[in-house]
Length: 358
Ligand SMILES: [Zn+2]
Image (tube, rainbow, N blue to C red):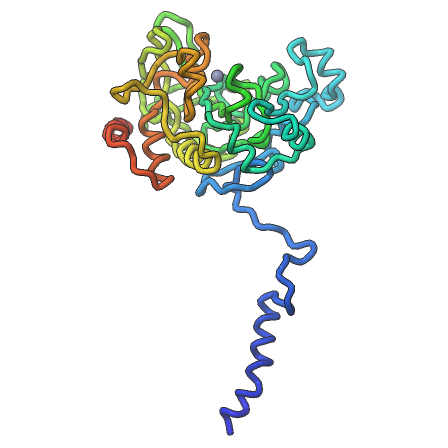
């Protein structure tokens, strides 16, 4: 008797449960007005949100982001920001847009299709094969965006701040202006760091790095306020306490290392880009023995190179990301995140560098 009663009620209970769970009849599409969830770790590639596995990403769509699409200056007084006034005030600003269309490798019909914004991931996968690393010599991402966007009329897809926040300023589909001959085929990132200098060259280290009881700490000069860092009261420390010496383009240079938070975010972003755009191989330019090539690549090698590289691999007048940058650590860790077998030599050297960090 009891069982019979329950059997009669089961369909009703089942329908009620479905209705509570948001299912009504055969409707499967989200309801009008439903807000699609975002976790805050997504980058934008050809209009898609792609997770980075936990890096903090602030896109140009988000409050506090840096919008590379706007033609106004971001940091001038608002009544001076429009394009006409900006153009009159800043000699280096030549065009309202600081980016343009990736055209290399596309047929005329494809150019027609994508010029209105219609990029898809498969097309982008065909034309992007390099990820170019820069240091910004601005010290913070806010300052870097001001210099690129407001003063120089340049652009880059990503800025990586001292606290490990990644700012995306443009969809990866755009041709950003950061690496001359590689702009059409690359994605770029400016990593906040004051750069590398010759031993006898004037450098800004005394202003940006001080010592406290815990070791070396970053000090943002008072004229930059709080530096615009997303993490309030962030205390930044270079991954290694002393300047690192090394030779780039045949010159001996010294540079303070990047912060552990920057390495962590960059590793996640590198793995994400190499997965999303698989022509970018998760590797760096190296010789037959596996050692980093510390200078510009000859033209034919650069033309054939697909992977992660430094700005100095592209131009002889550049030294970024500098001698402190830990290539083995970044590439080795990114390969692990991708589920690839880490190259044995990379793994050994990456581990050695990690030990030095402690
Ligand atoms: Zn650069």
